[in-house]
Every structure is written in structure tokens, then in C-alpha cells.
Length: 352
Image 1: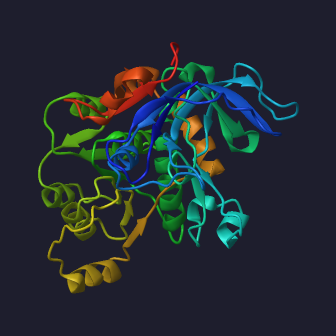
Image 2: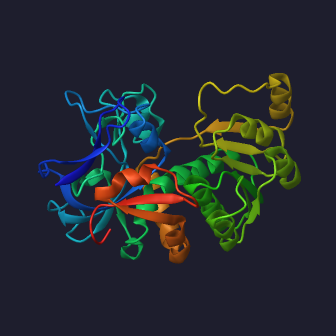
């Protein structure tokens, strides 16, 4: 089989390699890969900035945003031939910590987790892959063209779940949400916000291309002014921050409505410094009962929530979110940004 591989820590090591077909172990599904989503984490691994190969190996099979079709499933697994599935990314640490022991491995406390296609565990970027039945998520057959969006949707499904749990510390009836960043994570966060019946606002820098239209099709409002201006005007009850830009984070924290919740999903680049008056931030948080928290990854519960959200969504809108599909033999092209890119997908088979 062919697989998309990289040597972690070595720039320009991305290549499509011939590897032996995988043999499923007891309790595992054998899956034909259909499609693989490409995100910022993948680009960091390809650039040599991130990633770990499995112990004793030099190369890592890339890919954590998966979609495939079951070829073979063990009896009693709940899966059958032809099922559309995605593989869960993270595996709990072997110790395990308290969170992992309770199935909340997205909240691992000791960092000993592994991740498919990222950390010490081969990913889903191959024509064939295996996955434990307990770490496979079934998708509705109608999602064949867009089910590769499941993993990024799990990230925002978790974010919204955490927002609700924090809000439930007291009376909570949010009306306005501001999403900063109109990449895949931001747009999927806006999708779930619109499904919740909220007044959704999305902020991004671009004024051309598909992003403004995708936001409008959700019934949401698109903004491209400075973050402080937009946040001050919208006065959001909830902010989902998906840019990782320090100045944007500061501006939205400063301008939420009272009792506001800011969820940070974007990872900031190191080395960029901005002057911040932490005394003013502290005063704002305390006097307004505000909350700022970070959220990353997802557990099995969030995969179910994400699958339900995608099933409820307009399939045409989801299809338009995928702006470029690149065949496996030309996978390198997927790691170079193109004009108007939102989500780029590598197709692993002819029907992917």
C-alpha cells in the first residue's frame, strides 16, 4: 500500500512510500482510506517543527483527520463491511492518569498519551489502515464526501460542551457568539453556534474568497475590522477564539459581555510579544465574572456529538468548506497554501 510519511524533526522529508499492508490485530477494523484532512499541525510536522515517530522507527505515517470504509470487522464489534468510519486521534496514557482512566483522555494530565499521525503512533494517511473498534466512530452514509471533517468538528464539539459546562455554574442563556478566525475550526464552531440558534458573528481578515459567503450561508454575520472594534460592537456572551493571535485574544477578553466566556482553541506561535496590562485584564475578569479557558483535542463522546452535528448540517455547505482535493500521489501540493483555501483534503482512493 501507499502511505504519506515524514521523518519528524527533518524538514522536506515528506514522501509517499510503499509499505506492507497492515494486518488487523484482535479487536481491530481493517479500513480502506478514503480521505485525509490537512491542518496546521500536519504542516508543522512536515516543516520539522513537531511530531514523534513510533518508538524504534524513523518515519511516521502522517494524518489524523481520517475517513475510511470498513473492509473487515471482528464479530461483535458493532461494525460491518462498508461502514463509513473515522479513527479517533488520541489514545490514553498507559499509566493512566485520573482523566485517562475515566475516558477523558483529551484532558490527560501527565502528557503520556499518544496520537495517531502526531505522537508515537502511525496515522491514517494510507490506502489501508487499522483501528481498534473502540476507537472508531461511525458516520452516516450521507457524509461520504464530507466525513473527513469529523475530527476538526470534534474539537469544536468539545469546546461547546465545555462552554455549556462552565456556563452552568449559574444562570446561562447566551445569545451572541463571536468566532475569531474563519478557517475550518472557526467555521465549524460557527456551524454549531448556528445550530444552537445563537446570533453568530465571525471575524477574519480576508474580504474576498469563500469565507464571507460560507459565513453568510449559515445566517451569520461576517466582520473583517479590527478585533477590538468588532468585539466592542458585538459584546458577545461567548467567544470561540480560533486564530491563536495574541492581540486578538487580548481584544476579545477585554470586550465580552458581563459574565462572558472565552474559549481559546487556537495555538499561539512562540516568540511574538505584545504589551498587555494584566492588571486591567484581572480587573475585567473579576468584576465581570468572566472566564477564559483553553480547549484541545476530543474524546469519544465528542466524536458522537460531532457526527450528529455534521449529519444535521447542510451537506452542500460542508462540501463547499472543502475547497481543494489533492490525490495521494501529489500530496505535497496539499501542504502549500493556495488562494481561497479553507480545508484541503488528500484523497487516498478513487472514491475518497
